[in-house]
Length: 435
Image (tube, rainbow, N blue to C red; front, side):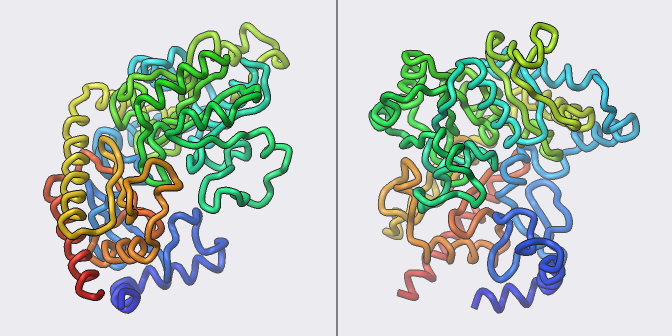
């Protein structure tokens, strides 16, 4: 029934997908963008809305993989980008905007004293891991089940169920054997798993993103910080999603726990350009300083487009707005409203479903208990997939068919949340009557 209605109103998307299959493996540039029978092809966006190539309008709750915090086509960033395009988008030399961007990041993020820019969160994680190994002189690292840190080999392990299967072909045993996998939100489990291991670092998402927007317990993070201090392990926060979103200083400000190295992405590019970065304490970041070390005594970082003026200026412009702090009460309140009203709805309909998240991030899980990690986040696949398509058919976009994830922007309104709750209630009502 869904497929018929969907295909009637998305003829151009179907045609584009058929063409895409001729040139792109699987017809897409990233597997997450695909759903059956074919994805929506978006042609324009403004505020909290996107329109597909057939002219259909949607409320967007994905917001560019959570990168767009002020809404689509945020005018101050667009204006800054236009001006920089005229002056020179890529110069290949040092420029003022890389300095301005680094300075504002160090002002906003409590643990970052020195900063370097990259082209993506994946790159930033790669350089952060290398830096941790260089600083400690140790090879092994640890990451958590279900946590996503991009496509870097050393971190591409135990990402999606089944957790014991390779996350990708082409990963060597040597690389995988140097990565220890830990249980999330289980401090005693972490202690047991790392016993006898000489780790360079432990990396985690303070809010597990792509597998359910599940926040770490504050006490878990506190215990993890103490454990790393006890064993001389560097603690790395992957704040590609949470950076500048949960608060001006990201998750570390929100939870009050400081890492040794922080990884950034998404919002750092102004919400419109690919970007990443990493930063930390002076004595760690000093290993990147070419004026103090020969190349064979330092940890390499570089990139043709890293910190280019177009991206850096867009990022600086957006961070300058976020620095005021005015957006956070609004988007966090909308997130709180969505979580409460959806949880109340599930309780009233006596449905085994829960909402996780924090601040402007949340996810819906058709599970018996409220998820605390990836293992407890594995819910009813029939309801999960059906709900995604029901939202899509009612003009609401989120990601993904296997897990509904939501990111709120400053352009969203209480009416947008009310619409999501209303459509969800209609889904529950229809599902009840069909049983």
